[in-house]
Amino acid sequence: MDLPVQVPAPFSLARPAQRLAPLVLVSAHSGRHYPDAFLAAARLDPLSLRKSEDAFVEELFSAAPALGLPLLAAEFPRAWCDLNREPWELDPGMFDAPLPSWVNSASPRVGAGLGTIARIVATGEPIYRRRLSFPEAEQRVRGCWEPFHEALRGLIGETVRRFGACLVLDCHSMPSHPGGPPLPDIVLGDAHGTAANPRAVRAVEASLQRLGLSLRRNDPYAGGYITRAYGKPREGVHVVQLEIARSLYMDEARIERAAGFAPLRASLTRFLGEMTAQDWSLLG
Image 1: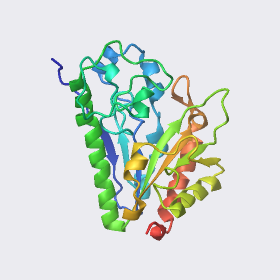
Image 2: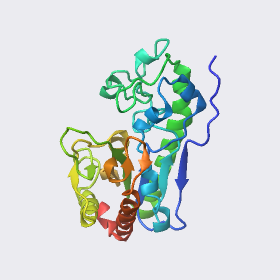
Image 3: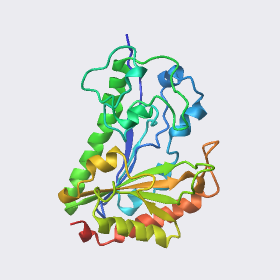
Image 4: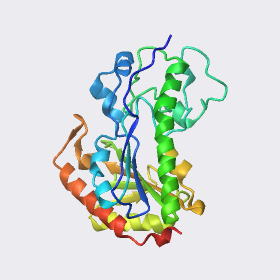
């Protein structure tokens, strides 16, 4: 019998004293509360498990509430439950019994080992020393995925009602790939032009470029579930994913803030200030 895992709230929501712009900040992969049951079931040490984190991303954007913008951040790690996936993308090979027929076990993300319940960490090592039960996965989806997305839908809805439109900035970080092609400082993803008004994407892009940051669009990250599921420009909801190079702000081997952390946070605070002051009638 699978016993309930005692866990804290699945997310934090920092609200501003006054909403000043139709923007919502989201950090779905920076959570770092690792349940004891997860650590006991894992074959990897805690540092290896953290390789999947977008570590400290919510801290980079922590000025959002003071600037009039809400910030929704996961408390649980991506390796425990990936909030940027469909709720039921599950790998049958990870489980000790057949999965329900309605589970999506054929997605490319499941095939890569990175479904809603990941089989591997981002660097490719298998996570678990045993097979899981479906009730374990269901507990994570019901207790983590669903509350987070309910909160996100609520924020989007109240933003649209107040401002007539909403722009979600879905904030992530990307690892270095030694020996691979060089990455820019930030990759903006709008699902190849389908998740956000092009004028909104250009406004985000121009503000970041004024800070001296190098950018690219949709290559190699065009946006995950949050970008594609919530980005509905015809309904006034726009989503732009930001993938920030980890080399700018952290020691990727030790998962520690590096010397570049404070300057980057200051730059992103200036970016958020510009976003707050922007004429967002362009979202209409």
